[in-house]
Amino acid sequence: MSSLTNGILTAWKKVRRPKLLPAISLSVLAMYLTVALFAAFFAPHDPLYVDIAQRLQPPSPSYPLGTDQLGRCLLSRLLFGAGNTLAAAGVVLAGTVAAGTFVGLLAGFSGGWYDSILQRLMDGVLAFPGLILALAITGLLGPGLGNTVFALTLVHWVGYARITRNMTFSLRERTYIAAAYTAGAGPAAILRRHILPAIVPTLAVLAALDYGRIILSIAGLSFLGLGAQPPVPEWGAMLSDGKAYMQTAPHLMLWPGLAIMGIVLSLQVFGEMLGQQTEKNG
Image (cartoon, rainbow, N blue to C red; front, top):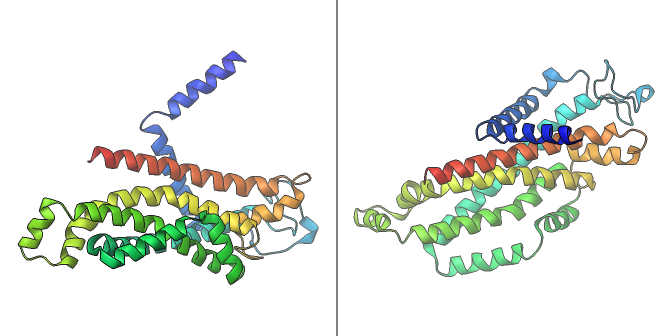
């Protein structure tokens, strides 16, 4: 038992080496991206094809990950689900970063009544747990992946707006900003050339870490039946479909669960690596 424990600890120390863990995470992220982009090439079957005669089959040469309750190939649905899940999370992330950065820049730079209104708005949104608020919005709009994306975007932009606003408010007092004003630069030029480049590294780290959380949120809402609707393959929806067969066919929940865990852990490591690199660069 002790030799096994020592072996595990030795292997973990090797993985924890400064260059090895980031390399593993980047390789995993590259694999997920490749699968998402070329799912049609890798999938052995049509992810929507129903064959009741093959329902709940265990892994086999014909179906490497088995089949679901409708006889659909789990590997094919997992591959196509990668594209749907990652794309939906990417849209949410792009929308929140763009909206939050734009609003935060204006509030932090202009101040006054606009900044005061934004502060109260952000306090109101942040008073509720993000996922609960997104759940309520999606419930009002109706189930669907598009509504889930919209709801999560409405919830997540506030964090980026607050960070951008605080950093902009601090940077605008710097000496080089005053010098740019003296040289005749206008507000738009100062924001574009001096303030935005200074906050982009911080936003990049936050976005890398937030991407995994958004994936979990989308999967969670789909698991509750508010996200992707049948027969669209999506990891959270696949988990929801498999929960009724957890005792008899656990592989229905195993594979999408592992897929979600792999991408979220890899993004966490990548985000931490990016943060450390940003700190080194000052």
